[in-house]
Length: 156
Length: 97
Image (cartoon, rainbow over all chains, first blue to last red; front, side, top):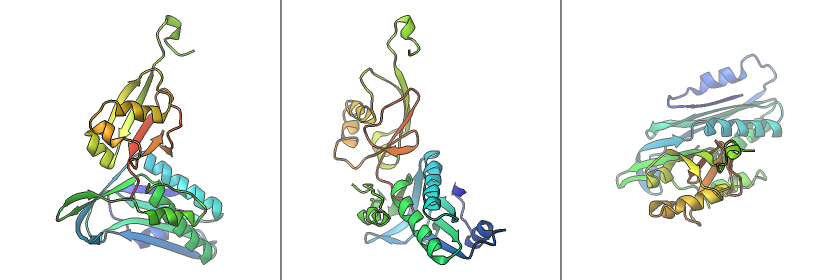
């Protein structure tokens, strides 16, 4: 099981190679990379600061990996999430999942992201021309998790 | 029997509090260690007790504000009971990913 919280950037190819190394049972790899947009809620984003809760973050990401592996046995999951100061175009998060067939790889990858969005203790602060602001939680993210039969009231 | 009870002292609980993101900024601190008074048994009690400090505390931790909490690194609700030495955190809705 692999979860990492780091300030450094990551390389998708290196991470995927490590995840599926020595495992000939893998027939599918699905990846999601979240990146910093230069516009949010109609305002230009100059930079972003990501805060987290050391200790709890790792624990919650591991719980998410466990939940995914329980739903899709045989799946391997990697989560890399960056913290600290990030600029537009920068990579924020990587979720990679492996499975025998593509269905489980796609599904588990999306599940992990939906889960992470509402349950892992990260907070984004954007720097715009009019100052700094904390990003608001979105109702759409709670709804995304609900598709998996899980209830979240993060945005309330 | 709690330590101290044998020598006639009231057992008190010592807990660690942590605040993050907009809550941390509003309260002007990231963590503190406190002795909770008798009668403060749950996370909800701690929240109400902290609001009693008034000002930004009352405002930031008010009922109806979008506030999430964690007990020993697990997201939870207000009904969870405190234990001696536990870690309680208050923070806004999460926005990672």
